[in-house]
Amino acid sequence: MVLVNTTSEFLLADAREALRRRVVDVGGTELGRAFSAWLLGDTATSGGLASLVSDAATREGAMQDFPTVAILGFGAHAGLLGADQVEALKKGLRRQAGREAVIDGLPVAFCSDAVGILGIALGTKTVADTELTDLVLKWFSKFLKNSYDAERTEDWQRCLFAAGDRQLGSALKLSIPNSPATADVRVALLARNVIEVGEDGVAERDGHQTLTLAVRELPNDLSYERAALRLAAVESVVRAAVPVVGGKGPASVPKGGQPLSDRDVRVHDAIGRERFCSLTNAEIMKDTNVKKPLRAEGLEPGGDAAKRCLDRIRNAKSYPLSREVSKKRASRN
Image (cartoon, rainbow, N blue to C red):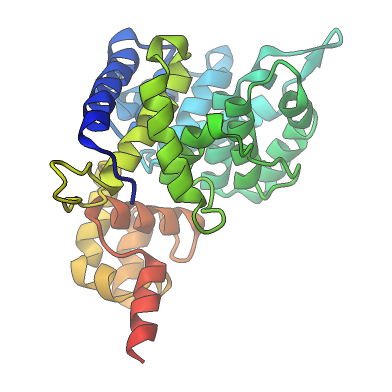
């Protein structure tokens, strides 16, 4: 649990407000806004993710460019795509995977777009089409390692490249940079369940460092996407613990995750609080009364998309995580 004193609390409040102004008021590209909305689960950002996804799904031909497909990828990971939109994403992924990565000896601009690459990877994993995944992996293999290693690439971008690689099985074995300057990026990606918790104590250390970065660095010195990552990380840390006020010790705050999509709400209602609090995800998905409503929402019981959906619900509703249910049960035996 990350705690701060009263003075730091005021500094942090100012930093949060400055970051939110940077992300909400200034705005970024369409892809940048989709990325921030995905990170924050927040329709207060400049263009809610559902709206951006809806617009992107209508584009065809040359209009279905790299940023458009990446936006659909973030929407897919957030559980926002309907059946027709999933087909639009698949078509876009095939189109992108057929593009040349190097022209006249120079890498094409998308090769260095870390945000877009992560969106493409998330979309590919979510649709879970073996043939399509192979196509995207083959395409990534042509440029992603070089983009990661390039001198001009910043460590926060390497974090996103590596996270995208991990989503598709770590074929390129790209590592998540462990520098203090990217602690907030790791926290933000962990909150969205696209990377895993590291060694014991690392998450707490990154949480402390995230708050330090937030109060020491001005948001205007950050790119839009970098500011969105920092804001998402700060919000995640604050949700997990509140400041010590007047020496009375920490107050109790629910962990609280991203606001749920309409589909996630329907899944939650079909499963019910009791199952989430008493069963692991695997046990829930084996329940015959749960399989049908999951499939009705396009989620195959046992599949990665279904598991992510259940984890999003647990996080948003402050239910115990699946592993916590197992540990509690083991402690009683």
